[in-house]
Image 1 (cartoon, rainbow, N blue to C red):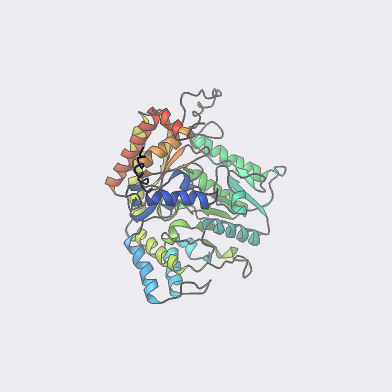
Image 2: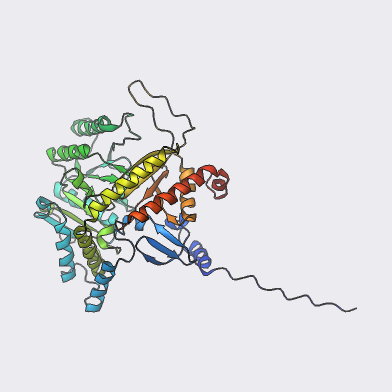
Length: 467
């Protein structure tokens, strides 16, 4: 009896290369990785708003390196600036020595600042991340005032190093004084609007002047003109002016964290310009490096009392970043991209507010310029009853729906990020070079993703997005 040889079995098809890259990333990289978890793509090419993945798919990038890419990916003026430095033979690492590239960057940066600030300002080049610049700002004001306390705000985000985390909203066991940041949609006083902001300012002033308030003598107050990670909450202009008056009257340096709001993002070159205030210290990073790592603080010369080496770092002289940053600053200024962001952002906000009329799960639409947030809520959950003089509270946030919307957006070739207290705010941070047609495509894809997420609870469950 003959035995028939089994037919050879064909090997399974090889997995696409990008799947192997993603698998190796999950095996090799730390549990602290963030964006890679919600955005499982492998970018290989990018230009402007568009990223192309290793799988051949194209995406509209409304994350923009968390706001770093003011001109989008690989803008020609940025690439040319980098090439010029490389082709010149100039040193790429110079610690904090003076170079023509640094001088050109500093000159361009100072040209964007309010005149009364720039004429009396000093600059400190920090380690290449915004959080290091925050640490430098804290050291500076403590050295200048001889005091240790810090005034910060609920919902704040200032970075991931120890001091910056202490000043951020999610901190525990902190040594700072936390003050109420005014919100309209989720007002801490249940009032909202101008009255809610006025109460927040009044509480701040009362606490600082209360001998029994328990506030350590403050070396400075740090705030974001628009809270980004806190849920895209723009600070009311009148409230910002009041904070400037309160700090000036008490000799407290005011630190404006413009890491994410700067370089035209909010419709003004620097977000503090909307209110007309001039802070004592500005913390700058992200877009000022033209897509490369760079962070600085700029401050009034009267504060320049620290000793040599009080804040140092090996990578303070990033020549490529300074060249790319100077080119970016000049391009934004010369082409009116801040004004463009104001106009286009207003139209996008109007479109999203129109969308809200048909989607009760959109609780709030807010933002400034091209820094936009869409808070998703569960309107079926019963909110607490309002007090007699208060307005009805907002419905609870819906982070599950927000995660589903983010995934549906990715499926449609749109990259968005989440933020806010419960990660229920869908955030848009497109480049300032966004065209009208691209803006319409972003809104259309987001609207389609929202509708799909709302009608597909099984999809949310299958994606591991259940509560």
